[in-house]
Structure formats: structure tokens, C-alpha cells
Image (tube, rainbow, N blue to C red):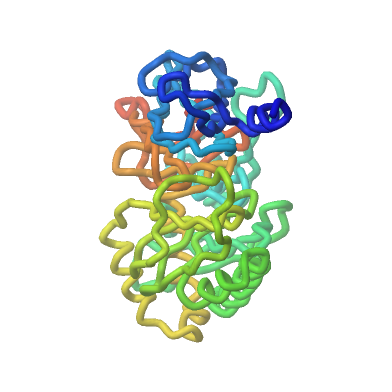
Length: 414
């Protein structure tokens, strides 16, 4: 009898003095970054992070609070003999703002899956106007990281409008096809292949641009398929037919995608993983809606955000393309994906998405819950990215009365 009681206790069973019977209990493990943060269960203070709580079966309102930081509120159900974990990132309510450049830029283009940014300066300064590669400096005491010159405006035809420059990156992000447009729309654009790692002479590919882009597009698709091969077979089969994959998470365990048409995701892991995410899933896909699929727990969540009118028109054009036409129209498909990624990006922890929503930037859990506004100050709405140390990088002109152009700033949310 004593042995049975010991075993029951070890498995989480406790005697309920009120109901005079043994009940099963589970463990809630709460951690936060930064710590310590206060933990409240159903409004009652229970301690500070990191914290393990033994709780009887039931539904609970969990709150995690730290002065000066965002709060987490979550409803969970504790089940007997199960450990449920909450690992939360808390973000400062008043983030710092630090300058990264003093060049004066009119356009910034992030290089996907890197911390690099293409900067375009066009301030009527013949010595400095041009294209540059920005990489955050790891050198101590370096206020403004040195910029690598890609090409100066003086090396281009005089009637080029730098603000209209667009870039198509190679699959390994080591090269780019830079397309320059003239102020006179009647003139055909010119395109050069230029390296982001060294400085060879620009190669004019104006006549072969579309063919090169198609080749690079196919390479990118092959890279995506390699990652997709690590997902369950049934998900791969549906993804090839029904998903427009926008981006894999940094740890490649999740994918952010848009449904091309209605489809159903049948359960792969049944019963569900013990202690897995309890947010309600959406496995009946609706056309053109956005989702995140998590292969570790076989969970699929809807992500709510609104497309801009221009993107809706672009999407409608892509929907009418056949598979072969989509490959040939690599520029259009890539432009659409990049436009989505200008609005939504994976946070480096693979647990959050960063979403530009009008004039503010939000962070949400990968399951679409717990939306937090992390920055609502001034910024150029066409650009933001995430630095290697998990802060935001924005383009802004904080003093337009005296400065003719914007610069890059780091928003300290970590």
C-alpha cells in the first residue's frame, strides 16, 4: 500500500482535502527572458521566473509580468501527469533607438536570410551617391559600421533614377542582378550582375536578365524542396500542390506559407504530442490565407494580417499562372514573396513572427496569439529588418526639417 502511494505521488497524484479524494496533477514550467518576471495564476501571485508549479487538472489564466516590459496572458489546461511549458520573450515598452548610418539613404533592400542590407544613397553628392552593402559591425567602439561600396552613381548613366533600383538575389545571396531604371520611361532598364562579397567589374546582363533570373529561381525552389524534404511525407505532398511557401523558420522546423486553394491537413501525429501547444488549430485551409505549420508538433495555425491592395493584384496575377509560367515569371513570383517578407518576417528564435501593421511593428507568437506592439515611432514603412542580435532595424528620418534623407536605426527590443 505504501509503495502504491509513493508511485502515485511520483506520478503527480495529490490528495484533495476539499473533495476528500486523490486527483491527478500536472506541472506548469514557466520561464522568461529577461528574468525575473512575476507569475500570476488566475490573478494570484505565485512567484517569479523561472518557476515550476504543481497544479491539479483544470483550466488556468496565466499572466507573466515585468515592470517596463510587455505582458503575456495565456489560457491553458493542465492535465494529469503532463508537464506544460511556457517560455516567453518579454519586450521593452520603451525601446532604445540607435543610429547605424549617417550616409543619407533613399531606399534600403534587405538581403534575405542574412543581416546584410543594400543601401541606396541619392542626395546630389557626386562623391557618395550610389549603392552600398551594410553589415552590422561587431567591432567595439564602432558607432557607424563601415560600408562596402557596390557601385557609385557616377559609374552609371547620368539619367538613372536610383530610387527605382531593384535587386534579384542569387540562391546563395552572394550575387545580385541590379536593375536600374531611367528617368525617361521610354528607355529600357539596364541590368548588371554584381557581387556582394568582392568587387569585380559589373557585368551587363540586360539581354539575358530574364533567363538568369529563371535559373536562380529554380535554384531557390530546389533549396526550398531540400528543407521541405525534412517535413512529413503527407505534408510535403500537400505543400507542393497547395502551398506558396513564403519562408521557413531559422531552425527549419516551421514554415510560413499561403494556401493556394482550399485543402485539408490530416493529422500526422495522433494522438498529439504530450504537452504540445494548446492553441486551436486550423487544418481546413482557405484559399489565399496565411498559416504556420510546425513539424515537431504537427500543428497548423492561421496568421491574420491584411495584404495591401497592390499585393492583392499581384497575387491574383500569380494565381492565373500555370506551373511552367510561374517558373518563367520568376521575377513576379519572387517580387510577391519579397513583398510579403517586407511585411512579415521570422524572428530569430523561430517562435515568433514580426509583422508590419500600418505605422507600427508587432511581434506575435508563431501560433498567431499574443500580439505585441514593439515599435510605433517614426519609420519608413517600406523597410524594416531584424539584426543578428535580435533587434529591429528601421529606416527613418528623425529630423526632416534639416536632413534631406533617411538613415538606418536600430530599435533595441532585446
